[in-house]
Image: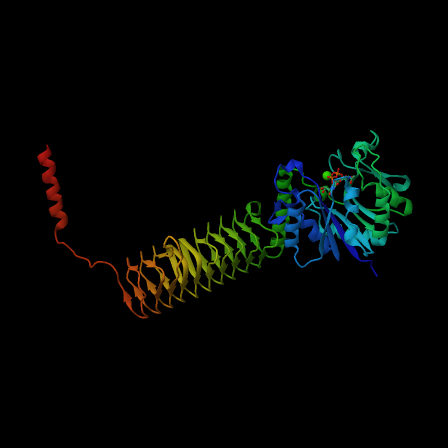
Length: 470
Ligand code: UD1
Ligand code: CA
């Protein structure tokens, strides 16, 4: 039987170069805080417990991560002073009291680590006879990293930090990625023996590698250097985001989604998209979004926390936020679907239509230039161009309720609170302040008068005035 797994994720660093009020590990990457990625990978690898070691901005980090992993076994340990990576891992010990098995050690600022590398690391540890397995890589320039020291036959003997390395050792191209899995008993014992006798006066976690090499063979798994790169400043944050975004886009394409221009498509982590959906150029889909199958999302559209049903056609430059759109709807171009908008099946929302806290029932249409706020629009109701719900009296918001099969003529103002019964007609240009009974015609404009020959008479009068002036 495989020993149980736990993980320690180091999140205590200051992140000075981010020049930010926000803790480095909380900076968002594709809609998730940076540390969400390694913590998620740890859970995916089968960890029964994950401990995040926090220090700088500890409260902020704890609150955000606890919320992101609600209901999952994520615990926190506080590292009071940043005395080095060895000290950071040691501060997680109390949170893992009673745990016996293998402990994964990851960094909260290394978001690109893949599940594949982690499972190779765990497999190498389980297959080996030593108390430790680690990840190494060969970046273009190893400057600054710890170097992997190998002895006769390539056997790993330890890690030397760049600052402590001899010129000879600095020529070594294989670096320590900083990701390990270690037997818990060995780990806690080894950490107790660390001393800060080194160039930086820190307790180096890397010193446990030499100790492990004395007890058995240290297994090494090599990874793509791009995968184990951390984030130190905002330029690196953007570089990591770029790669993560490409991975997400590829995953969707492999699952049957067409991205017309993946390079300009921004899809957050966690977004779900059904097959045969086509996403045009320059589209952003962020937050908790669920897009059905056979959907078209036109160029330049932006979706935030929004659900789109199967077969819906979103035309270019439409913007959605906290909205639920049913199947087979037509929206846009240039529609603005604001929070609390619910579109049932087959609804049409055309250009320059804005909705907020409004439900349009099955087959309702508002095809041009309308504002529908705090409203309920019945099934099959047609809202004419230029219709406006006057929902705000300067203090409070009020409801407009239109029944089924209502015909709202163009340029109507519905002064809320107001109700219109099923099948009623509202004449174009009306200002509706009172409820309209079902089946009635409501008309609230002055009767039209035509003055025959008026235009010709006016022309003559004006011409006469012009002559007098000459
Ligand atoms: C570490 C390794 C080095 C490796 C490199 C890979 C050590 C001594 N060295 O160096 O061999 O090549 O990672 O990136 O481990 N942290 C804390 N508390 C601390 C110190 C650090 O939580 O007291 C966290 C940091 O926030 C960061 C991680 O640990 O997420 C690594 O710390 P960092 O100072 O970047 O280590 P390096 O010097 O880069
Ligand atoms: Ca580092």
